[in-house]
Image (cartoon, rainbow, N blue to C red; front, top):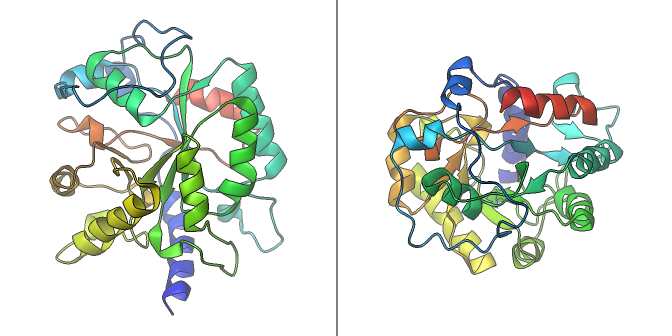
Length: 292
């Protein structure tokens, strides 16, 4: 029964996510008037010591140029049963490989949350043309297709896990096991929280904080042996009232989709754009430039 609910929830996620803007607001573009600080190809890949970093004021963070962050869901070939909206969130295998090749050929270097956190708070150096790749919802193809593709390019990524689905087999998609999630973590990728079952963050009350944040965090930390510091809002939806709950639980940054960043808590409203299944590598390249 729970898994049937998951299927419904996942479908709803696709529909609701499509309502999110894939382009950057003019206000955010104006705020991002500064260039990325002292970028060098020799900036540390992921060995950034963030333990001593002091969080900067919101104005300083908002003034830094945003790093492009892509959000992917399923990476598989389209089926006859996939609807028009669903295909927006399903990038076909060869198209995904071509998109990644485009990024590599264009000189993009993947970064991880520690690097982003250091850059936003201190202006720490980033590689030239930095980009962050994120993958939501625990889909098995992220392990079987995405991970090998990224390995060949020397790329790392962030995987936001919905814990209700771990190890499950669904009607339309299968999900990663605990061992596969641990392997991704052990190989230098970052595992983040995407709640228990994708419930709308804006509606949390009472025991939701325990069910959707505390228990998933504990499980993911048991799987990876690492502290959970990154959180992705289901559907990209957030509210300012919930941000203190994330901070209280030790989260360091939270990722939405494409609405304007919060003027008080930009670290908890970091923008991403969905990499559409309809986009060619050229379209993706243009969208990155236009959105960030």
